[in-house]
Amino acid sequence: GFSRIGLVPDSGGTWTLQRLVGRARAMGLAMLSNRISAEQAEQWGMIWQAVDDDKLMDEAMAIASHLATQPTSGLGLTKRAINAAGGSSLEAQLELERELQSIAGRSADYREGVAAFLEKRTPNFKGE
Image (cartoon, rainbow, N blue to C red):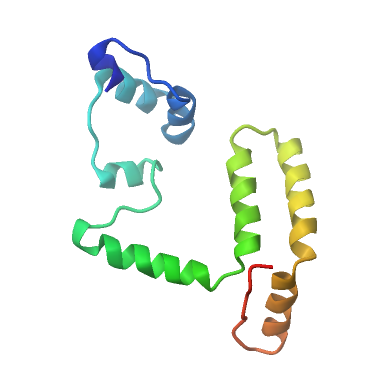
């Protein structure tokens, strides 16, 4: 870690880490440069999911296959909202969500999703 060579974590690391794991854990990780396991990173909320090495490619492909069948335009807007949330006030975040929901609600994928739901069929999203 940075502390082992006399440097400070950079590239927003101090800002991000504290928000992910809390001040005490961030301080410990930054000051002690201890390594943590993938399982510990998952428990602390630093990563979404830890996967065994031998299952990594299968899991990645399963997730990619699933995402490819979803309304990718809506997923992109969701990603944008979540990425913005860490630096936004609740008021600003609600405004962004309103704006993004308005965009999503005019999409072909939204219309397809609603139609598929009403017709009790699997939707065929096109990312539009």
